[in-house]
Image (cartoon, rainbow over all chains, first blue to last red; front, side, top):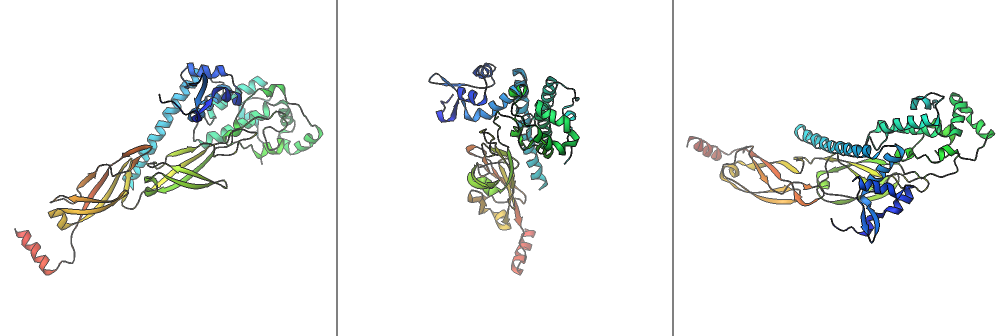
Length: 100
Length: 295
C-alpha cells in the first residue's frame, strides 16, 4: 500500500476525543475489518477520506445500538444499494439514448 | 400548526418508561435513519419526526411539559414563565442522537413549545453536524468533457468546485463540509450535487462512447475520399472508403468521452454515414447518371 501523506490522516486519539468514544472501539472495528488503521511513528491514524464511513459506523453503534455484525451486514448492503443505484443511472442513460 | 402526538409517532403509550421510549426510538430510528436510507426524502422526514418525539419524551422536563399541555400547547409559554428549570435530567445526559445533522429542523409545534433548539433548557451543549445540502447542476456534453472548475452559489455563499471530466448524467458527487454549519462547534454538513447533462444536437452519449451522424457527398461515398469532422476534442480528418453505403458505421477509437476519474482513458466515437443524394442536377449531370445507370 502507498504511504499516505500525514495531511491525509486523522489521529485516532483526536477522532475519539472529538466524538467522545473509546479508542478500544476503533481497535474493535479494525479487528473486525471494518476500518483500516495506519501507523506513523507509533501513532495510529485513519485516512481523512474514510472519515464519513467511520462516523457512520459510530452512529450505527452508539445511536442505533447496532452491534458489529449488524454494522458489517448493513455496510455490505448499503454498498450493494449504491452499486445498484449506479446501475440504474447507467440504465436510465441507456434508455435516454434509445428514446432520445 | 397542528398538535403532534409524539407517543403515537414512537408507537408507545403515555405510561411508557424511559427504557420503553429509548427502545421505541431505536426501533424506529433503525428503520428511518438517513444513514440507512440514503437519498430518501420520506425516510428523512420520518426520522426528523421520530427524533423530535425522542427529544421531547426522553427529557423528563420536556415530557412533563408536553404531557401537561399537549393539545393545549398554546399555553405552554405561561407554564414556562411560571417554572424555570436549570438542571438537566441525569437520565438524558449520556444519550446521543444526531437528528439535527440530517436536515435537523424541528416542527413549528416543537419550536413553539420548547424554543428553537433541541438544547433548550439544557445546560450541556451537544455538538451537532450541520445539515446536508442537495443541489442540481446542469451541464452540457462539452462542459462534462473536460475537468473544469465552476463557481456555485449555495445558500448565499459562493463555492468553487472542480468537476472531473467524464461525469455521468444523474451522477451525484459529495463536496465535504459545504453543507449547513455545525451547531455548537459540530462539523459542517456536506453538499451533494447531482448532475444533469444534456446531449449536444447530433451527438449522443452512451457510457463513454459517443454516437453521431455525418453527411457525406454521394461522390465521396462512391469513389472514396477524405472528410473533416468535428469531435469534442477538435477536428479530425477521416478517410472514407470507396463504395461506402448509406447508414454504414465507423468507429474512431479513443475519440469518445473520457472515463470518470480515469486519466487518459477514453471511449470511442461511432459515426454513421448519411449519403447525401445531390439535388438540382444539371442536364449534363442527369445524362451522366443515365449513362451510368445503363452501364
